[in-house]
Length: 314
Image 1 (tube, one colour):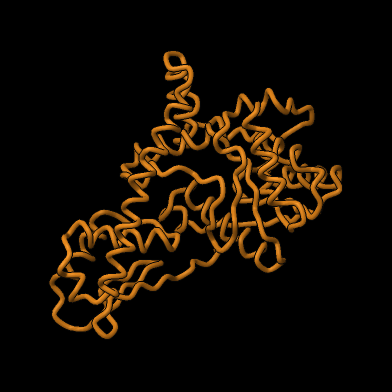
Image 2: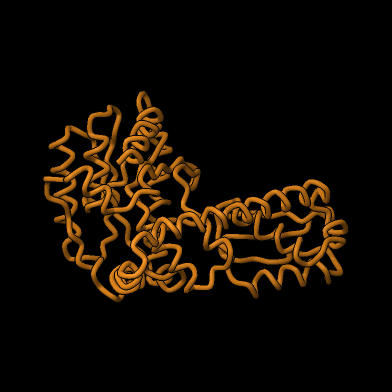
């Protein structure tokens, strides 16, 4: 319980006197967050309707009623995902990407400084398992930060190191919250982890969430070391391709991964990075090296230049 009190104290120091928003689905996690922050002024609820569920508009109404109940402003954002976006990123990935993209645009345009979400330790561990099964490598084990800067906004997750059960015991929510029954469907891989894998592991390793959290932060120390190495190599080469070619394959790969991830984009695939490295070492004339949907890598005056294209919300 002490961790929850410390988290709330930390959060209120940041938020008091600032404009902030709560990412509000109306579900259990965001409802607890609303209960925790309802007395702080300058709060706006942000509800995103992905138009994927027959009940989505009734959920809108529930969230609007909650805003009225707590005397808060609310912004409803409606998203309609294209078939192409879903095919490219997967349903969960597309929902997440365009949700944050839309929210960030609204926040920046309305002078709102922070977005607060209800993610907790269970979410962090589930994401860790998902990334392992997807083969995301070392960076897939990177912890979800309490405070991060993505999509041009500060995102705060005050409960990311706290188990959902602890939050339930501490807050004892008495109001009604939305139950999205798709969260119980095995159509979504996260639910397989949540209801099969996690339940099975917890029978034999009671505190496995905390153990995984410790290991995630140990891995993070190695990730930070790789980041510092990449920054050093970028500095000593000034991104001149002749100097980059003097580095080992591993260090060139590390630079590429660092720059792309630092700018908020994911690595398309290992083969995509391999092709970048191949062209860096074998190019014979000035030309475009690599183009993907969001990343362009070009040669300008013998220097390697990365350009990033912000996706539109479609």
